[in-house]
Image 1 (cartoon, rainbow, N blue to C red):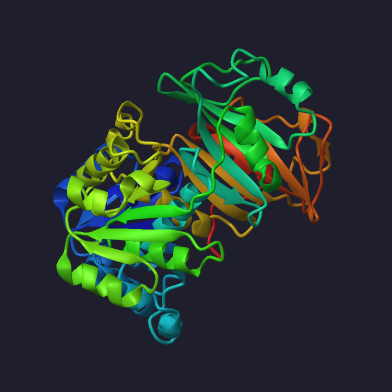
Image 2: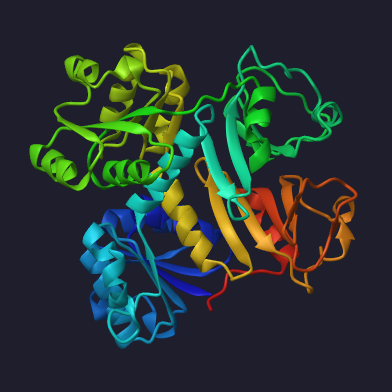
Length: 458
């Protein structure tokens, strides 16, 4: 498939990396020639320096015979015009645009993106995706990463193990025997910086970071087994009143369990705007790193602090300050993946990577319809793929033990009709079953072959 990616920033880079690694014909367009050079040198892609919305630039990028265009530049307007030009001049059939401004995303204006108006097939909102990720982190406070699958009935939990974990030095197959009714499977382990899919005989050690699939009804029990207490969040302090902070606060206000939230925003106009929009959230104007202001927000009595400004360093320092002041849980928004290893050393409990959430969202829309969800793990080291099994798939009609999955692939859950099943070697995979797989990045092409689902356009 021939794909044009407009924007060679962090999101565009990751999408290009994924698609070029799966043998697609990828061209990257950016008006920053240095970013284009970096992409062409590091990835198997072609590069064009120029403004993505200019017809002559798209012509040079091969738009005449492109199957898809992904507009992910930093400008909403450039992304929108790029899709319009791609449709009107070149007839590109599949157009995806990243849009940030809330006004463009308001549901009452969704008619704007019709084919006869502004022809965008899929609109991706990073702020909306990140706000949803933040809410999921708050819902599972003792995890460093979490994502839901199978319509919210299966949860992926990232759990950091400490010395108090009661199941250390226990082979994973023994865990299955000890907790035979537990619908949970360990599918990934990060040890000393290296992520891998474990074998049944592998043991877990202190300081391991593990990824576990759990039935949503068994999440609390799963966390308890790995030594993590589950506590209901009742008071939350949000640092940052931009689009992400505002979306989180609005979602908390709409929940039935009445979480009490306070927001700290440095910009006075932004704080006033948030105060006008929010009904029950107390908005404080000032610096989220200011100790007096944190005390005014009763940070020592809060259950969690969520630092979601547009500056990574501010988020990290504000989270550290809040923890020092007595807040038991800190979540920070981190754009730069090289800062993630600092999280543990600084005692920050969880982080949200906007790039990973946006990349996951875009990948979900560019794979074929039988792939229902995709989640990118770490710095694109692994993927979680939820897919429906086709009758033509090599895995249909076979037991799990007989399927020739690569070493870096583990099955986390199976949905048969309305029933969620914990997969064992005896589990038979049948047509129309929905499965969730943990796949190391290098094994994704082989998994797609087994699913007989290739990246394609509709």
